[in-house]
Length: 435
Image (tube, rainbow, N blue to C red):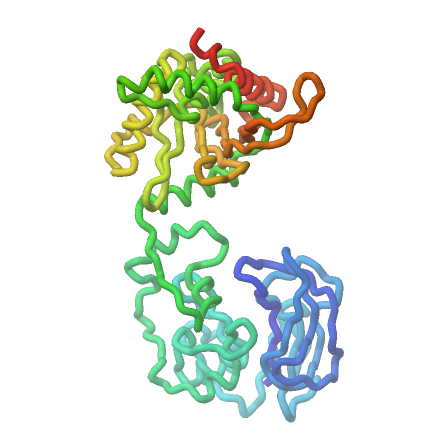
């Protein structure tokens, strides 16, 4: 019986594509593996291979047609002994071939009102579609086979005729089997467009370890996916010359040594950011859905990497605290964060965050805003570089790159630039942070 050739899903996230070019014409004989057409997805132009042998009886979708949904019939394949007369006059988008008089009348219970020999719809497991040719689906239905238990040998793991012909009925599906396994909620948290089963099939035959998502990783994935999808990020970049700060820090650490204190560059960045929020109060704001909340104190969050994720403990009233007080508080919060001993009030709040990867040798990067914050400051490593001094002479200096990721709903470009200018000014003139 004539078999529909369906628009394939050439990537796990593909929902529709453009049938760019047919490489066969009506009447051409094709074999499994022959290239039928070129299809444009959202990422690339890919070749579409035949998975069954036969003759192209009718082309339903013309070359150049865009917006063709996955699983839409695009052509009809005739098996040996069939002719174009067997196709019938069904609508072009969803042809329903006539059934031969001698065709079998067995069909699954849920398709009793459909033509007896029509291929059953593409099955799903845990919400993921199983890729199988219409002929393979029809044979599987007739033999009572569970396609989820059959490994496909066709392109991209698609199940073809040969795979089901040799399969045993032991793979039959149970009608009353639950659709989801007990661990389905963890799979549902996957933030990508492809399902867990679709991704796993990409790596069949490769050695890997499956790592379940714990609560922290699931939350991080959900929040950052939401942040990137819903927050209109833009980025502002500045370099900071650190030589004055490094000298000032060394002098202060000598004085703090008897008390066991030691200031880090990050402590100065926290203080500079807190004071810049006071200098540019319109940046000290968060997004609250249908309004903004403009904070009076400078509450600065700092990203801390922990096993399996990260915390952003908040240093409240950071503009009012001394550098040594900020340093001691940050050390305490970071230590308890790594032990996952922070109370919620210690990591909820703040209007901005700081993410510093300079200690890992990262020179610059773009951080994702942690909602509802209005911004996040990404800090890179201090690197010795050639620079031009005030007199026009070439010399060397320790230069640090900073990138401010900004929520455009809260902070506009000029305002963000003014804030970053204040941060740079405090860091390049560190004594002003003590005034």
